[in-house]
Image 1 (cartoon, rainbow, N blue to C red):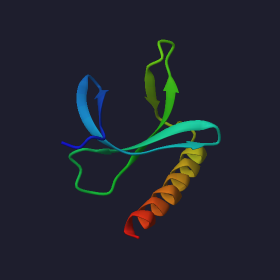
Image 2 (cartoon, rainbow, N blue to C red):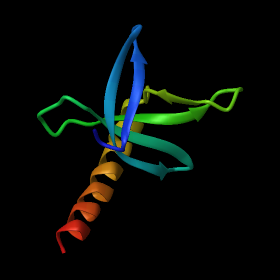
Image 3 (cartoon, rainbow, N blue to C red):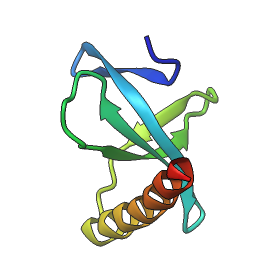
Amino acid sequence: MKDNLIELVIENKTELFELLLRFRFKGCDYIALCPEDSDDDSAAIFEVKKADNGEEIFSTISNDNLAKEVFVHFISIWEMTEEDTEE
């Protein structure tokens, strides 16, 4: 089993996701996840927020323009990371 798995409860069902990347963009924290059993290169990106009890909450990005900007930023970081691992 991979070390970088995160367990999420979605609609009362527990699902495993692989942590691809945590990053900051425009002062906010984001996390990119891939379903653990996925065969494609899909990624879901969530904004990371803190609940009053200190627990992290992964929230969808409701603003379409911001979601696009965050995705482009994620891709640019991911491509740099991929290039670094190939060297």
